[in-house]
Length: 136
Image (cartoon, rainbow, N blue to C red):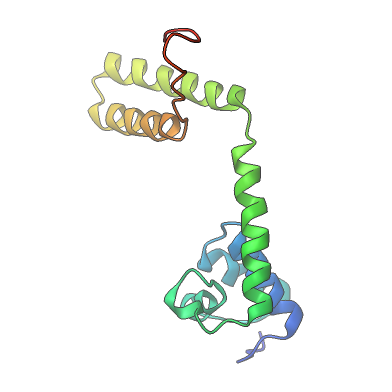
């Protein structure tokens, strides 16, 4: 039988903060706590460790600093994903679109188009100075 705890120790709190800062969902964090520490914690309780949420406004200064420092590293890491990976994903989605058009599958078609839109949305268009650079 799993033991239930109402409070987390310092290491467990840090683990929850680190997981949330890396984009894990509260349900995923809860599963990790269950599997690794035999702790049952609700998603609402886990959100108290996310300073971006109203529930996390009382989080200690040290844990807030840890969250934001690690979250910044996480976001920077995501931004470093090479363009070739994005290009490969878009190429795959284009094949899905072509197959969907051929099969008459509107639902898959719309989903693939929306996914490509999201992939391309993160790319910023940089406008060169007038008269400089290449035209697109």
